[in-house]
Image (cartoon, rainbow, N blue to C red; front, side, top):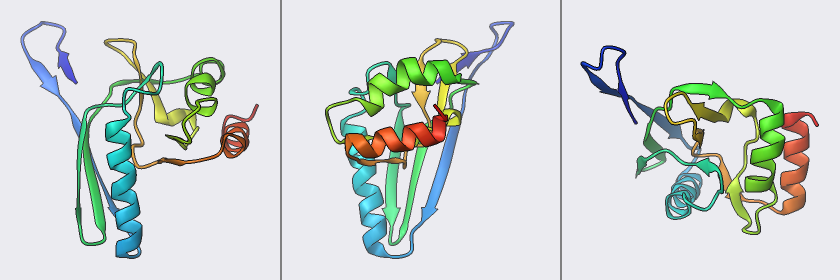
Length: 139
């Protein structure tokens, strides 16, 4: 993401790097597979966008570098009205699996909503998603 300063004299881009040390190579392989699936499905979460990212693996260490999104966390009502239908009720079992509202950022510039904790994606049944959402969003 590019941000232009108030004087319109500079353009700045931010990235975030996350390093995940897994307990063994099998867990690392599962993490990298999840990131690959997210990359391939990044345009399938309705109003929830996935920032541009790259990723890799070195033995049992998985990492990703993603665009940093400046903005605000979603409100509880936005979680119910936007995240619930886009992620919890989606037909595909592969989905965003963390429904803590701090992981959903409304970009200050574009007003688009981004999911930022990219390694929290996996296959989940709809019932599992309902339960996690109810617990994390406290509805």
